[in-house]
Image 1 (cartoon, rainbow, N blue to C red):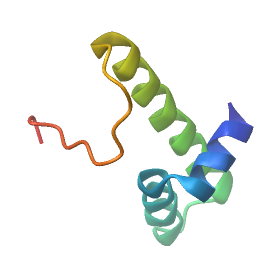
Image 2 (image 1 turned 90 degrees about the vertical axis):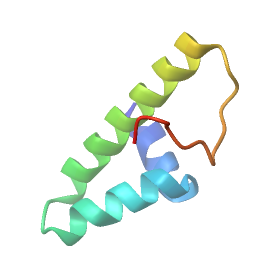
Image 3 (image 1 turned 90 degrees about the horizontal axis):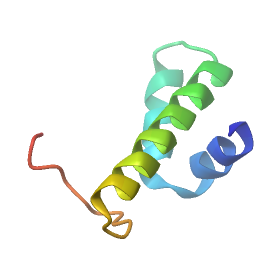
Length: 63
């Protein structure tokens, strides 16, 4: 999962924003990559649960 998080950090805008925000707070890059991995897991389970394809521009109605 660590390699997937590293790839997502490079190519997924939401994951890159999360990574940059955590590192800007002074946290380590490894901790930021773990947060990205957790975000990927949440995205994967949400996609599996809803049955909808991945939409990069999706905005939750709960937010």
